[in-house]
Every structure is written in structure tokens, then in C-alpha cells.
Image (cartoon, rainbow, N blue to C red; front, side):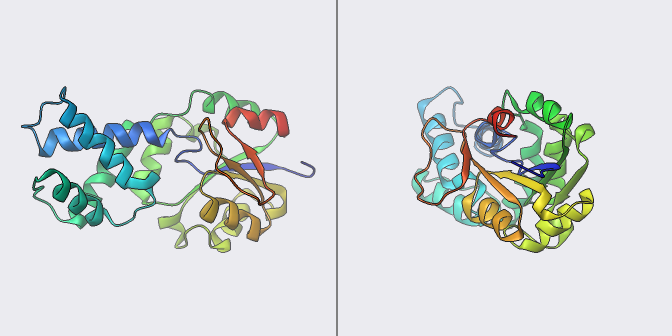
Length: 223
């Protein structure tokens, strides 16, 4: 890719292994609020797997919907509102943050040539907590979280704000993310060059022409 001066990343399921820390957060949740369930039982594991499924990669913003669906299926009662659950989630999920195995090394190698940034949707506490816990913060030239920006992806204004923080034009930036409707469409419409990552053995089907990778380290072969 010609004329590229910066590589900007989404965080969850791009640099951070959200499947893993989502699972561990729900493990903490069930242990905390349903202590009578044996954590070594198949029932406990079934609850975790369903909660991760209901979560839909973090795209379900309505935590009350997740909570009520869970309660109805398993005949349990969690003594908190959806708003309280959302706050609990923000305050706990970042504690379990882990990166994909190749994320740190890839960022360090890219930083030898490009400015590096993170642009992510989410709450200030949650997203900054993840970035700090990941160990990536010292290597970032800029970080922008949607709650701080006042806009969320795919609004092109948040992509433009990110480019401004780096002292660059959108056309000089690559943006890497996993959610097409937020990351790829937003980057594309802003003028950034989108790279769609899907960290799974099976790529999502798509007829739209976009650069695609499966592992973050694949960037080293295309940049």
C-alpha cells in the first residue's frame, strides 16, 4: 500500500482476544452472582457458553436483554438491573484482557516504519483499561475512545479526529478492524484504507472487495 504513514487498530477481536476475556468475565459473573452453581459442572459451562453467545462479540449494547434471556433460560434470578449489569461489565471486563499471541510483536515491527494508533468504540474506563493492561499503551502514537470523542464508529468524524491526532490525512492511514459495519465501512467512507480481520479459521463470506487478513501478523506481509 503506497503513501501509508500510520496503522490504526480497533482493539476488541483485532488486537485483543475478546472471546477469551469475554469468557473469563462471564465466568467471574456467574461465580459472583450464582455461587451455588458448581464451577466444574456442565451446567456452569453451559451458562458460560450461552452468555458468550448472547453477547454477540460485544455488539449487543442492551445488557438487560442478555441478562433477562439468561435468567429465563436457566430459571435463575440475578439481583441487578440491566444498567447495573452494564456498569459491572465495564468495571470488570478489562481486568481479563489478553492480546492475540502475535499482536505485540506485530505492533513493535510496524512501529519501526509507521505511526501506530488505536481507535475503539466503548466506554472510557473499559477501553483505556484494556489498552493499559495489554501493555500496548507505551507504543501508541495516539489513542481515541468513542466515549471521549463524542462519536462512535462508523461516523467518519471519529476517523477524521484520529487522523488529526496523528497529524495525518485519512488517506495516509490504514485502519484494521473486525466488524464490517463499524470498522470497514467507517474507514472506507472516511478515506482510510480498511483491512478486515476475522480471527477465525473460516473467513466470513463477502463479495465486497476489501483487503482481508486472518491474523494480525499478516499485516507484515501486505504493508
